[in-house]
Image (cartoon, rainbow, N blue to C red; front, side):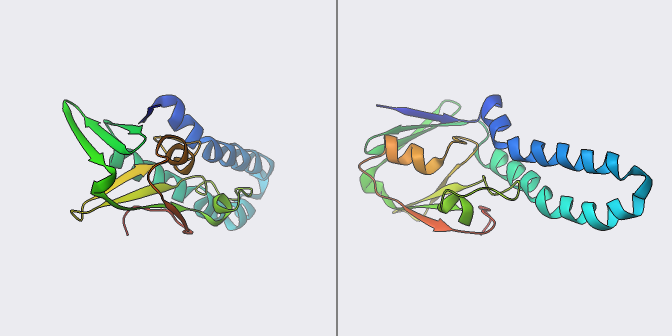
Length: 167
């Protein structure tokens, strides 16, 4: 069984679903507090910045990280295709796989912010190179894709409040 992971419009919309929900919610709050402009900017605008802005940051970061790449997960190897170049990472080439997720994702909880559904897997190769599989490739869960298609390669999950690939 082979799993194909790539960024598509449908997968991006699924990843942005919480962002869109909060955007609509804040728009409704703005309409109802239109005569109280000061209240909106004192209460709702900081909440918007905290809850929604990080999702935009992560979405752009993840998109840039995996743009134009297709990953094929096949039992004991990962095939990375970018344009005409195909690189195969066998089980022996992989040092470890860590999936970084939000605390609520880790315990299958409810997401309270728009960025909690963003997560990624860092694959550390024996050469020291890192390969990143972001949630834009499989918004249903990179960990789920790994457990279905890469049964021969173990991984671990690690909680991270803000799942950026930059550190």
